[in-house]
Structure formats: structure tokens, C-alpha cells
Length: 58
Image 1 (cartoon, rainbow, N blue to C red):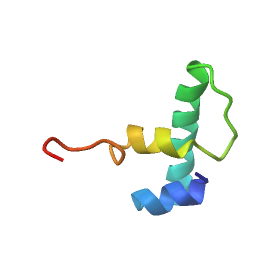
Image 2 (image 1 turned 180 degrees about the vertical axis):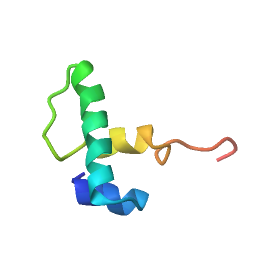
Image 3 (image 1 turned 90 degrees about the vertical axis):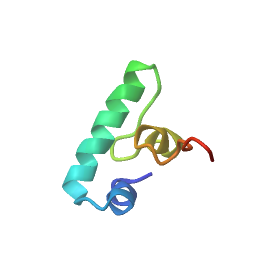
């Protein structure tokens, strides 16, 4: 996902979305993954922002 996609998904400014992308990429780097500046893995983004997890009873 690009920074603009993150901003649209969360309803935040592009500058705040960039901070989120940086944080998520830092977490991925610690896990040994290769990251690209300004982009974040969609699956990881969804997991970390709770949009990818299912609620109880679903």
C-alpha cells in the first residue's frame, strides 16, 4: 500500500499516514523483512490496524 492508500483507509492526513508507514516498516525490518520507503505490506497493515482481524462470533 502507498502512503495515500493508508491515509484514505484510515481517514488521516498524508503526513500522519507517512508516520504510520514508517512505524510499520520499522517493525517489519526488525523481523528481517525488506521494506520500501513510502509503502507497506497490505496484509501487515490490516493486521496491525485491526481491519484484518475477525471479531468474535464472525
